[in-house]
Image (cartoon, rainbow, N blue to C red; front, side, top):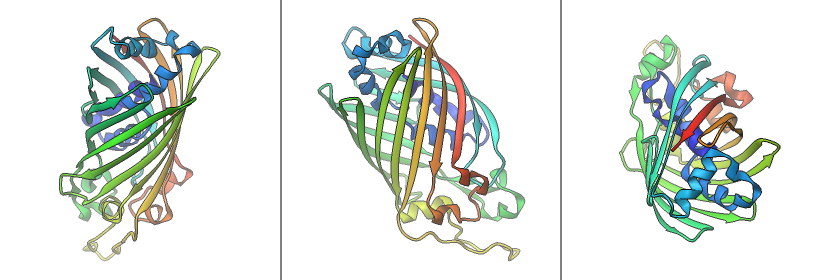
Length: 292
């Protein structure tokens, strides 16, 4: 549920600096893989939540589609070196038969599913670049603009008791970062009173080329004030998230969420990394979602 709710954040194209939010939300369990966890929880009274009950109709073949629309508000502590900010964002996701989209940023197809094991393939738009003239303080404007990337890959997930285990591998197909992303994650849901608590942890590995593209400095400051900065080796990034979902009626759920992220020292020591983000708080907010 909350997966759709949050993940739909992915229409953030229309907001300034939203790539940081979209990229972060996309890496939470807020993706369609998370739906399998809710299916496995159907005996735990989770069907009282609009998202779960509507998705189960799709899963049981009683409906061919699932659509969720919503609105969220977040406070963002960005990865890059500019001030924290607030944002209001749309939430959109949809699934038709075995095809799905998460706000248009991740689009994929379910190749195989037997109720517990799922195999998907996808193409994903990743926010790996930046516009230094717009996003950074004036002394870093010499870095110019770096394009974002398209990644293609596949993922597998397996429901093991109360846990959803996932593993994905994707590669840059847009010739921007020369990078790849390997991610392992675990998620679970716990209904408690009127709140469906969702817990998620992931560990992602990006290769050296991708890390330098996003956080390295490969050219000298014309004014001589900033030196080049190179990141050596692959980099591991940890994320932990919690969301609490409260049902309003048969079509509407409200939610609050928190995402914490920890980057390795090589990334944190980059001059363009936001030192205020070393407390690991990246996103927190609230919102509501309407499902059809």
